Amino acid sequence: MRNYLLTAFLVLVSSIAWSQNTNTVPPSCALATLGTCVPAIQGTVVRLSDAASAADCTAGGGDGSTPAVCVYTGSAWQVSADSGSGVWTGANGETIDNATNNVFDFSANTAGGVIISATDTDDTATLTVRPGGASTLTLGNTSTLSTALDTDGIRLGLGTESGNVGSFKNQASGNVSIDFRDYADTADDDMAHVSLAANCSTATSGAEECGLTISSTTGGAALSGAMVINPAGSTSFAGNTMGWSVVAGANTACTTTCTSACVFGVNTAATEADIVDCADATADECLCAGSN
Image (tube, rainbow, N blue to C red; front, side, top):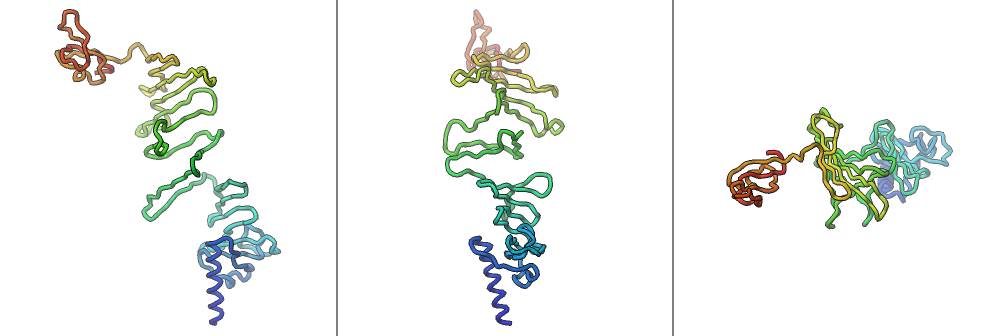
């Protein structure tokens, strides 16, 4: 009895040691004696010598040439790793495939996509994905339709560097567009409310001619260009007005009279109605850059 307990203890220790160091070969057992060969404790790893295939820990009959590496999940034996093909299989049947060099493919056994998440003791775990050294983190490729970020906000930064904090590039000629959507507008949550679009009429290297269009929506209509800056630097506005207003305020600086930004003030009491600075308290009327 003492020898049996000692043997079981040594098998358990060797099994746990193999799960922590894959350079050590785990215990080898036949399916018929699996329950007595190693203890059925969650996390125990065993090499099934007579597996039907390298991906099956429940059927025997194999010739031992392609053994399965199995782990006990607490209720059943599951394939832990197939060292021949580089595929790791989890308790739910999902896999991590490393058959292609430098590629780790996460595969679900049902439709609906794959989720990679992080958990810690207070359920607010930070998940960090970063490249090695001064390299590039790439999301998607040229065939990716879009990249969705489901978050309260987006922050772009380049560490301690100053200057540019982000770059947006399209994959073909045409506009490079960024649109903004107010999540509070639940009835139209797929509708862009404001957009910025950069377009180059000439995109030849060293001879670029590019402009910027700011578009907005009103009355539920589709986006329309509210302001256009052409490649020459001229600015045009939609409609027949720039939306500026003239506001009266006797002997009051336009910085006070204007609700929006002041363009200039006019002292109407002067002989020739002098144009005055926005901070000049002799102004009687103000040209304000916006509605008042």
